[in-house]
Length: 115
Image (tube, rainbow, N blue to C red; front, side, top):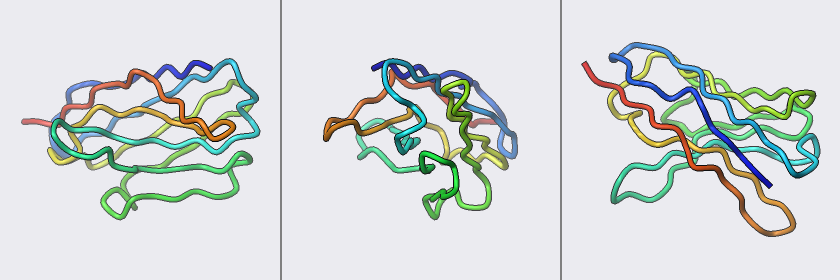
């Protein structure tokens, strides 16, 4: 199982970014995919999740209305479109999935929101 995140960058407040996670090594289209974020000395924070068929999504209240999660089961990717970013969104973002009771996640991609 491999999850590789990309797209992180440094942007000013109010900016936008699109993160992508490319998955391999498992039947991607059969599993729920999530985005989490991590800041130093804090618990990992759930950001968004999408069902296997992309018919259902869920978001943390802190990002609802600003972030959009999507997936492409043909290309084994799950994206996170982020708009109207604030400094509080600064974090390492990583995608996560659970297979057979075991959690997998990638190395993450850094998003920095600063003027």
